[in-house]
Image (cartoon, rainbow, N blue to C red; front, side):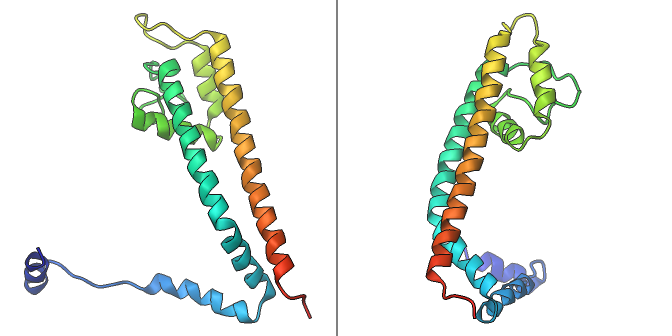
Length: 171
């Protein structure tokens, strides 16, 4: 296996250069010796990282559940070419469903998607969900998104409080 890259490198077909220019941005952390705010930022991130990773994993599980519910409710909607349901945002398969639910979670044209779902743009052979299901899906999804945003902020603030308590006072 290691012979193939060696031959390609010898023939000049493969250029292996390691670009480390992006590592220059890490020089900012050397200023931590002199700047209390940078030390506080690094300490906050280090205290909050485990809890943020845990809540991020739970967030992805919840987004996947909402994506599957979206596939059941909105799968097969006619791609109207409007601002919402299109070939780039739909619930027709699992991949596009997760991508669409992430798009809705960020607030990107969720109102257009909601209006398309309310207009029941479905082929006649698919039973369209009732208005109550559409309302319930979007209200519960938006409420859940707000809860996760609040949890992220709470974790960050708690980590910052712990970092401030452990850092020496400013002189």
